Image 1 (cartoon, helix red, strand yellow):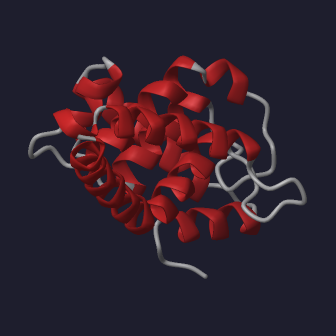
Image 2 (cartoon, rainbow, N blue to C red):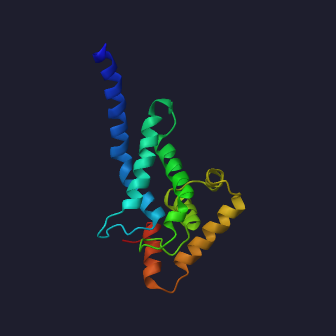
Image 3 (cartoon, rainbow, N blue to C red):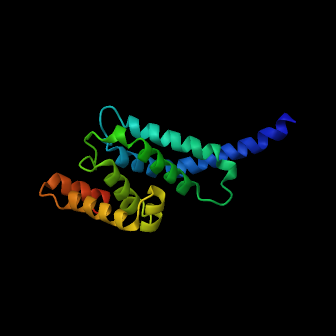
Length: 164
């Protein structure tokens, strides 16, 4: 009986491991952008790692119930929801790529531009109106790209994939 149960459990763990191997890098980058932690700081990215670990744990717990759902999308949704609930912890700039933005601005900008989530889905995920999401996104882009500071401009270009 024990051998029979171990097979499906191993398969489940293997499938999840494969998912994590393929998606963890991008999801960690997303979490790092949200928390505004420096990517290569001396302390690493502890808040981003905690956020991602919790989201991956939730995805693993729900793995059998996904039934055709995209696990990446599910994990990203959980990551965004956790960040939104814990945004008060991420108010103070830490020197990350998007440290000039408020938590809500970071969340909208990352979902819309970095992750490519449509405006309607972003609005539904965050419980905001489409017009509000559009306004926050536009303000965020203006803050990042409209700066006369060359460092801020390079950061915005990197986020949008146009820079190093």
